[in-house]
Image (cartoon, one colour):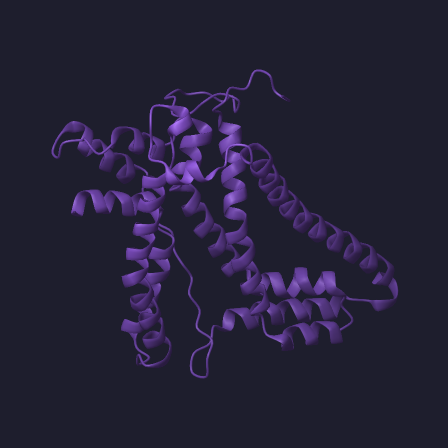
Length: 300
């Protein structure tokens, strides 16, 4: 309605949808990192006369910067490997264009188009699936820090200490009080606006789904099998397949995952092997999902 020249499938829709999709990951991970900054650093900055804006910008964010960058890289790796959203929104038109209102094709959409379950092993099409991902491979370095009684990353304290010392030498309470209040108010308003924007986008999406889909939902739609007749078509087989997949996945992944986490946290000896395993687990968590799909295609 706003852009009449835009097609049903276009790059702008895919960018917006994928951006909304990775927002919760960036928000939750960044929030955990920011809250893990020691309370003593915040108290020291407040004791020097700093307001909330100065504490956040000069102490908390520099201390948690590596974790924030890691959360962004993890979300970007999820966006790179996203298949369903880009296939449904961006389309699958192989063209070179700078117009965001036209249909495009991503590497994941190309892999889905080529690999439809009937690609013979050893053919050119089969090898192309792997070649697309090999040429696009990116190495993401994860920075893992361990904070306990025996191990500590002193970079957080050094960054915050330098910020606090710099603040103490330049901060003049009598001359910067009014300016600090204005900055603090603007910063708080900007953060609140960002939060409200995320919530509103989620509410708009849910409302549109309810309004557009309520007239089509019925028990027959859930209980019937796929059919070439629209009034008889349903999602029973697809729904059962998804439930079956999730159930089998949870049967072996949940016990193994929780057991490995408990062992690494409470029983594994502190050694280089433990750090190596934890680092590899963190890296594997950022691998795009399409790579695991190719692994399953090639391995099984």
